[in-house]
Image 1 (cartoon, rainbow, N blue to C red):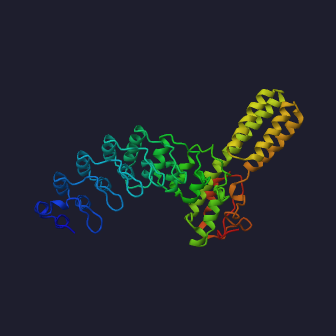
Image 2 (cartoon, rainbow, N blue to C red):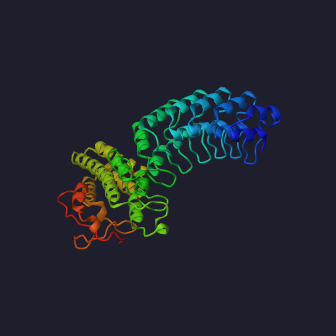
Image 3 (cartoon, helix red, strand yellow):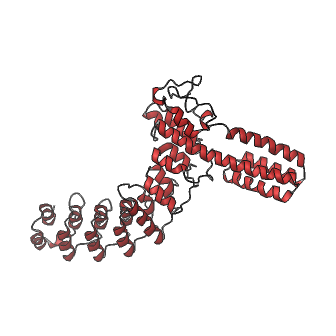
Length: 412
């Protein structure tokens, strides 16, 4: 360790140390820190100014690639940031993970720091080794105000940030905010008009991530959004639908079974069911509405109108990758083109009955890949935990349905 390092640690004698060992101004100690880096770590603004005036390298990086600028940004030390930027710090240098000072300023959601860095030429598009832009890093931090989050996102977007940028697992900032359970950030991203219907590289949509990670508050917020374009039956790379994910997490008996997801509480299970059934029912109602329009056109023997509404269904099923229904609708389209009115009508009426039956069935009555969410015993609850579940069930399901209570919440 040089005398300059010692002076910084002792907070005394820096000028004298520089006179005795001027050659050591950029020498690293046994931990890989230069004198300037050490001064920034210790939050010694005066020492930083003295070292910079003496010719210290403001861009010298630590063993892990951190620059003095990154350190003071992480500390949210505005005056030190201004000093380093005035001294020509390179705002786009990366640490060993590929993150820049703007990544850390975004993670802190500090509008003042972000403004300074953007003015100095910081890139909003730079990705770290995980494929994350500064906007992704914002989702990791929650200890800030909604106002600062809004200002941060607005500044990044104005500077050219991509609201739909994907990291290496394919998560957009919106999907990542659900995965990390950061409600305020989710809310601001939605207000910024991010896409709600995206899926990541594991074929997980917002419902998968909500079932796996979302708190009661996040689930309640998602329930008021228009998620009708999301496929509620989409299977992820493990073959699980969002409902499968919820049931698996709810039935887990230990950390080995649970894996990464947390076990949802009963209130969270019910909130997810409300969210999930809302999305499912909206999708079914849209299909029913379009089929009824096709049926009406068939009654008028209007081929063009019938095919127009049928095409809406075909395009949706192609997007959702449900090839069996794509094939079925195309076969129906052939009947319509050939003016086979009665056969086409019969096919549609049968399909409508199936959709209406599904719509009338609560999602919790349908077994998942891992069994039923709840077990039942002749309609009577044997669980003290859910002794008042009738009131909550009425919130989820039609009042004319029989309310069936949960027993011991074990896997079916």
